[in-house]
Length: 438
Image (cartoon, rainbow, N blue to C red; front, side, top):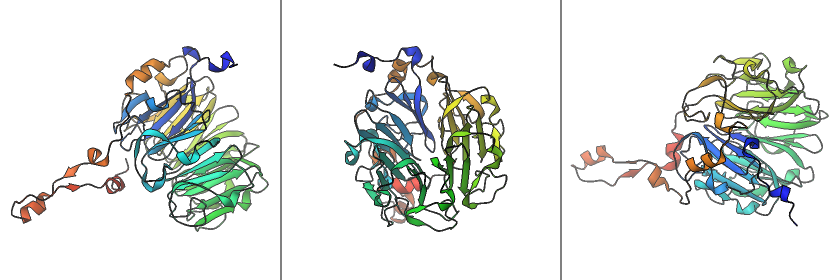
């Protein structure tokens, strides 16, 4: 018989955010009532609502209603949901280079299960700019997507449109995984750390500044019992079982936290946090955040849009306590390119940083340099029915021709004596690559 307690939905006042992810300019959260919500930029389908519209506040992703989701993760312009209860992994958004794992490069506007992972018990997923990792309950590591710098760990630089087993780590189960822009970091059950991919800022931590196509052991971390790894765009972070935090790689904006702007090719302990036992950490594009054993939040690095949450827009080369959350116990963290989200033990959700695409979820597009409660996602204020009603169920893929402009070539028409010339389709991938960072 089925245990009634296992199927009982939580009371409305008990619903809370249990997983959160940030992309370049969008955000996704999983609620304890088995609902996935998303907000922010939607141009590439990364919100999963079936259209390319932005959302200024959270709306339910209809395709994942009661799908048994257990975690959500975001890449730059795409999203992934682990549906562990059904042994499925769904992905959606920008599909260039095969980062969605569906065997092609198509954009997906409605979450779709990754057929190659169907039936596997995937327990972790990590997303970078253009590549993705997945780990099963046995510790097997799969990778797919862009591979121009060897970030898939397959020993070559060929992109992979679908998941492939990383054979080099077979036998040492992956326990923590992270993707940077073009590099990868993995901690294993033996306490070792392996890195590969783009390494020219020292972000692989092996003392060199070259790419690696296969997992390479970070010997400087051997014996430190690393339990968690994370990546920023081109910097890396490792956390040991005693709460010590080590950083390496690019530090132009102080994102390594060592009090300077010098790159590090070897892991270096963040000394200013030596008396703080760090328990969770997250890396943004050029910033880093960490919560200590008391749940107090510290941030450092790039701060142009207030993404450090310290009531200023000045970069910080050493960790600064986020004073507005000093009395909170932060238990979840996620960083986008320019924004940050924190969830507290009491179920309160805060966001800050860049808001131009609505990625902060406050119903507007303002930047914020201090944490602000995301009211409709805070425990005690979540209304699942309203989140579902505001979203629109959709089932159709929107082709690029309907999403990108058709531009008449007037200059060619003039040269042709005014005769009509076929319109020029602004190519999807080219249009995206020409975007200006904001």
